[in-house]
Image 1 (tube, helix red, strand yellow):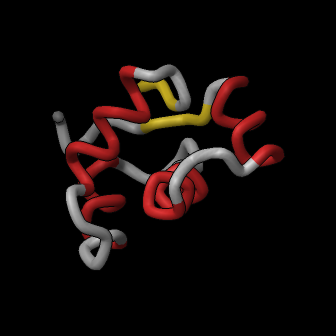
Image 2: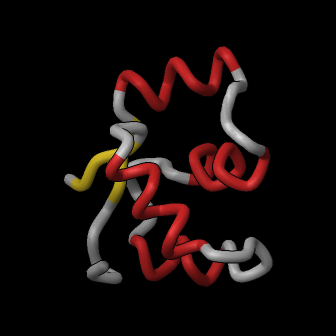
Amino acid sequence: MDNSRILVKTGKGIEELKHRSLPQPLRSLLIMVDGITSIGNLRQKTAQIPKVDESLNWLLNEGFVESV
């Protein structure tokens, strides 16, 4: 995944924040996706969260976030 890419929440991601059905590590990562921060900066900010790359890929593949 390119570190310079920017991610934004999709409609599905915004709905998830209302319903809280994702496990906490995925939800925390979703909350941090703001449409401004690059993937590289997200990786730095979330160094304490295990498997960040796998989680970001899952959020992308499941439609909770998308690249702009």
